[in-house]
Length: 278
Ligand SMILES: CC(C)(COP(=O)(O)OP(=O)(O)OC[C@H]1O[C@@H](n2cnc3c(N)ncnc32)[C@H](O)[C@@H]1OP(=O)(O)O)[C@@H](O)C(=O)NCCC(=O)NCCS
Image 1 (cartoon, protein in one colour):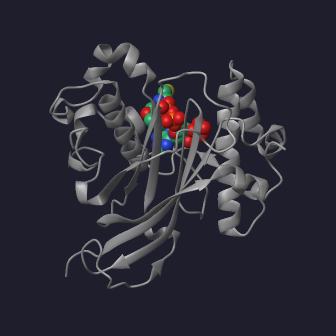
Image 2: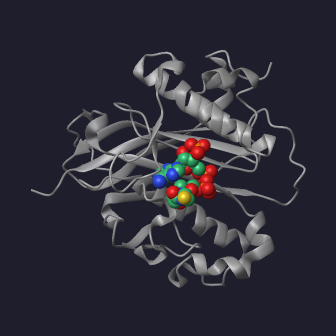
Image 3: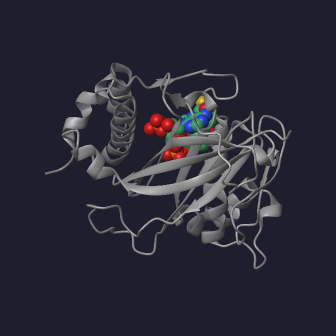
């Protein structure tokens, strides 16, 4: 019998850097507060604090506990993921921030099925131990606009679009790569050529993998279509800059596919817990 396919829904909470507001600092652990105090730029501090606040609010609702009871740990959950944050007994989540975006992806229902992707035969919901991890990334096109030639070595030549690289296609490839490697848990510690994705002008897909990166059928990848601004954000001063995002799943033990991917409003989530900007 073939290994059952797992399908997972993912919610991606989206917010602007300052969306959590000043009261969010009270939610930080002592280690996070120390880290937050070390940022040199206020906007970097806000991105970090808002990311952690979105994780606590989303997982608190899932676990039925208060956000401040959600203990985010960073460390060697397993050998492959030395720096990945996680919450014991909770679904996998992933944080990304760049420019005017903070994204937090959380795995929702995981369903096992004996068929192929899209097969309606379902064996029902599995619990968080189903072993499906999520990774999300968002990137500004600005660095690639300014330094494209210097950056090209970072992606395999096989991902080159038919018409050659430009800022948009490079950023697309890069966001997909980071999303997959966050789902795997290695981050960019994985050698470049251990992962080959589809060319940047094709639909997102994992073509080849090796080393610590599981086989392509154990990974799933999608581009995310972000609106031009997060809700409640001030209009951006950096005209012409766009942000591209991707989300990925990793399930070393079984083939995996997305059931649904939903973009959700971060400020709405935060306001349910008394955070945000009045
Ligand atoms: C994970 C990584 C790809 C993040 O890329 P980035 O563009 O700098 O930042 P992003 O905003 O996209 O993502 C940052 C988030 O990734 C998450 N993250 C960090 N390491 C991760 C890992 N190994 N797996 C999954 N997610 C990870 C964190 O949640 C972090 O947000 P937080 O610090 O606010 O909690 C990159 O930092 C990396 O490859 N790290 C692994 C290598 C490493 O440990 N380097 C440290 C130097 S000693």
